[in-house]
Amino acid sequence: MATTELTAQSIQKTIDENEIVLVDFWADWCGPCKRFGPIFEQSSESHPDIVHAKVDTEAEQELAAQLQITSIPTLMAFREGVLVFNQAGALPGPALQQVVDAVKGLDMDDVRAQIAAAEAAQN
Image (cartoon, rainbow, N blue to C red; front, side):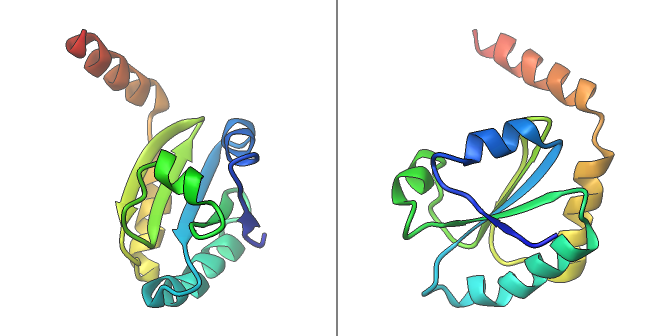
């Protein structure tokens, strides 16, 4: 499966309608982004069960600001609509595979319980 371009209008629907979504925030002028692009594309070919999406931070500046993207490339992973990974910096292939494996292996009931406990502690 090839990567999908996301916009402010399509990102939430994509996250809501797919079990796992990886989002690469990038820009055309960014050298590390250009090096990470083929690695991300290869992951999309290896994992057709996961949506691999890209957000061009130049075209989607408001979305990037809303998601507090301050450095690119930034990789976000969503599972069942929950942000479970958020890291700036280009990853080598094996590290991206580790992220994919970790996201696939998450116990989402436990993740939701941890989020609920953290929210309760703040209130």
